[in-house]
Length: 169
Ligand code: AR6
Image (cartoon, rainbow, N blue to C red; front, side, top):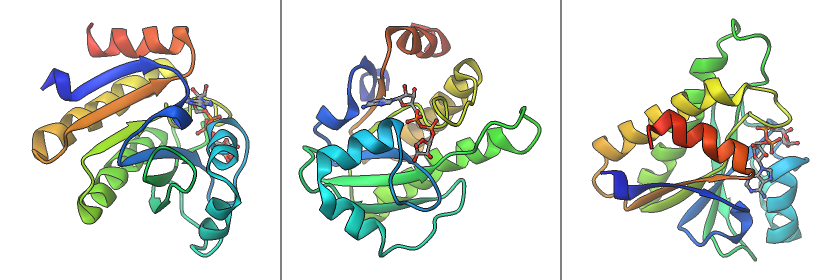
């Protein structure tokens, strides 16, 4: 199973996959961080499609085309803003991953790359987010044999190390 899951350091906008996941906000209108990078790389058609979708509640996800990205689709997942850890943040973060995999199944997608949702501007501690993300990814790989590859793209070496430690590698 481990070869179907890989952790890499890099820029998710360069990844070729059936889908990359965006750490979006509920407006789906773009923003900073990985959201800004994805919109810049995809081109303005991405924003135009996003604005047809309406609001996306925290913990849920929506799918669009990838436009100028090497990825065919973008799954926009809205992670929780960290509020100290007692406001359902863990469950909402897990829900982002589960809903992203549900959209992949619905659309027949087999390869996906995730950023570390919520651990940038939204302030979720990465040491707490990594085991939640990896638990949901492993569960999806076990439950969904059609999934060929799940890549987690960490932007910094420090973040990569946190995920590697959480994975036990
Ligand atoms: N490739 C991979 N990871 C990246 C990239 C990239 N190009 N750029 C940043 N990261 P963040 P959030 C990492 O802040 O915490 C936006 O304004 C980053 O280092 O992008 O979920 C949205 O519109 C961090 O580890 O997302 C929302 O308003 C991770 O991606 C809000 O930020 C997530 O950081 C969402 O905040």
